[in-house]
Length: 305
Ligand code: ADP
Ligand code: MG
Image 1 (cartoon, rainbow, N blue to C red):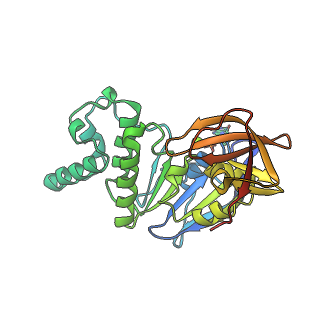
Image 2: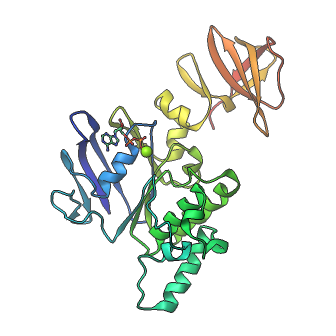
């Protein structure tokens, strides 16, 4: 439905995105990941038609999405974009902000729809609060609800839960992503949080060094991370005999060639992450209890599932 072909873009001389191609199906959830500064936000803005491309094309079905040089008004009805820095009306209520783009022609429907949207982003008690009185995370939720209001075909979300505290984040993420699936709304989500990806995204692309380093299902990239950068997105890992090994794949055994010296134990809830040293390199593994510093321990690598 959305097709990106050989897209290249630079703000000034230095390229930010180079020769990027991918496509998104109706209702698909695509994550864009990459380090800070890798161009995630830029890619979303370019997809939204905010800038002119240096090269390449973006199509929605047969229609080409064009930048400001060819299109006076930025933005399209079928696509909504929630920026990292959201743009709300501070002196009006949450409900009014959410309903801003809903038609006043059917006041009852507008009210019902606003109510439903308030529930999705868990802001019902704040319906009549002025937006300027909200926290950053609450504002982010208002921006999300407003983008959902007219059921777009595609939603572009830039780090949508980054300002939301951990108490709310999990349930909100499930609500929003479940809602998008139910309504068959495609979403492209820029994030550096694996929790936004695992269990939700159908596919993911990795931006690195201006290029598209990988494009695959989250499960495939998790199981076979081509590079340390991809592995680091998911979990703590070590490189053992040139292989990337997640901390969860190393276990303590009686005897092995992999004898490490423990340096630190970090409490992680259901396990401890143990930092150790082997051949002057750091090795990380999970263990059910803490291990004293300088203890020597043998490890073995559990086979991949
Ligand atoms: P990310 O969202 O992955 O952190 P960005 O897309 O914000 O990355 O930025 C990618 C690169 O483009 C960075 O080097 C950043 O400094 C640069 N950049 C971002 N916005 C602008 C702009 N408006 N003008 C010039 N350079 C920019
Ligand atoms: Mg960004």
